[in-house]
Image 1: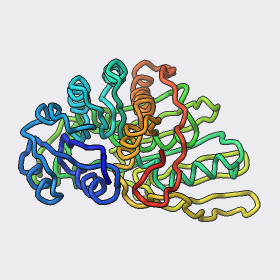
Image 2: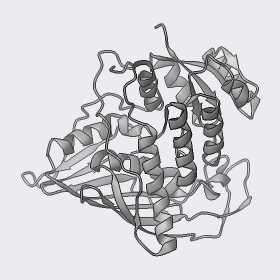
Image 3: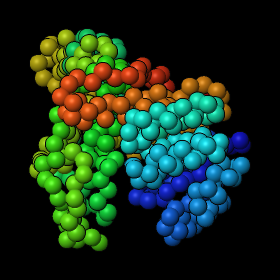
Image 4: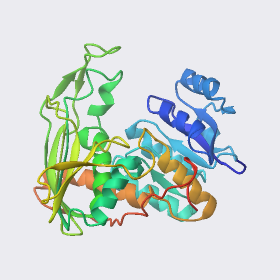
Length: 370
């Protein structure tokens, strides 16, 4: 296909593999033009495996390349702001891994730069664009649970130090269970129930240090700098009230999920870290949960879906779903749990959010509507 949107990767770490695979083989309207990474070997391996035309010495060389249309920022969370800011100042459109930045103030600055320069700015997660959340959204919008009045969501686990090869950053500024995994849950919730109006939260650091038991840092003791037990309630603009609980402190094996409660039924939404999964609907007529079929595309791991949608928007001038309007609102929600706990008060959100257009089917998978 001619006139593909060209993507430059900054960062070729763990999450990059699925981006490389999908942007090469699934999404038909984009092309990876080049990559760079602080560990040059990673970039060299990506270039060789995926036949990528260019390997940049650093991100500034990538930003200076006129062939790069969109910078894909998949660095570590606490590096997102600096990399995205430099790319925007260089005149590049930016799509970032989650979160948009480590603080709402830094996120607002990125938005301001993008607006001043007329650039697109968006980011992950894009799992809400997959088959499960889109089907759940249709079930709710079609009235199968009546009027939504509440929700609950949780991510409960004992942290990444026993399986991740480099888990220290999860416990440093920009990390923690809410900033790490919260974006999936909050993004799903606001696409199902609309924007959040205010938040009350409580947080704590349950364990002041963590001992890494995975390789290659086995035995290293890490000081915990961010809350690892974060819980609270959200009042949505619609009037629905939802709870969200994330922790790295608990041994638990019941899985992750979201429940949406309505006046005429309850919907169980699968793990929002994935694109598919099992949806269950309880209606009073049956008295039990029924498995609902997935009615949309992309049930498999489709990372890059939001980026491909952004690329289509760049080509056509239409809006795209994973824009800063969403990622900035999500960031403010994430931060507000901590701020509420610290101030012992409700936090009224400044940002507003209205869900974008639902996904539509295309005759060819990997092609987006105009």
